[in-house]
Image (cartoon, rainbow, N blue to C red; front, side, top):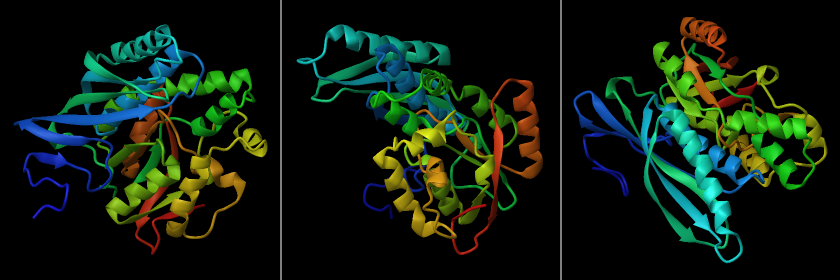
Length: 316
């Protein structure tokens, strides 16, 4: 019998039992829907760029499952009494630009008057049920690969505090507006064991979800993890979001040993529109890295999957 809130529908391939990135529902033989929704608050001042980041972020959940986004609906929460409507138009224009790049059709949406500006999208994708990539199916010996550097939460905090160097802000915006479509297609081609996109729980939090779902231990090689420019300098200046500390507190009981030093904070940094974290068998990981390099796709090996060792995460 299904638990409270869970469905017993046999066509539900992926629900929320393993904290996966999107739901997957079979609608025909060889075809399933990938469904997700995501809403964020502004990270940058430019409304067009904010809209583009929000849409890229929402699309990412479909890519993390190996799906192809096909339709989307806008979700806008807008303080109409304090902000000009033209600002909302720019946000929606930015979102539309990201959808257009993804080949995803905007079919409608809904706007709510709210005291705080927020924007996101509900996205529906398509996928062959036989190739769905879950976050809970990593295997011992798999290698862990990430497809974007970390640091958006810390950089966004610096932007809001008007203490972010222009070069660092530009780099963060560039990464947050890169679709995960190419990396998604490549992980399918290479037969990924499991995957997720790195977002609000940070690299450590999403690694924990994957490791716990699979009943494995994930070993992260800290020095191999790619970071944005000047990230440790921003940390030294105290530009760390509260979510970073909350993520560290959540993950700490599941670590092999306490890692409270500030040098580890980027691993807990909440990301927006982050890259994919992919588990692949060793030979498939080598193939993925080779093909990524040949096709201009950013990819770095950052760790490995081990049999459960009494804890879900360890940093080396």
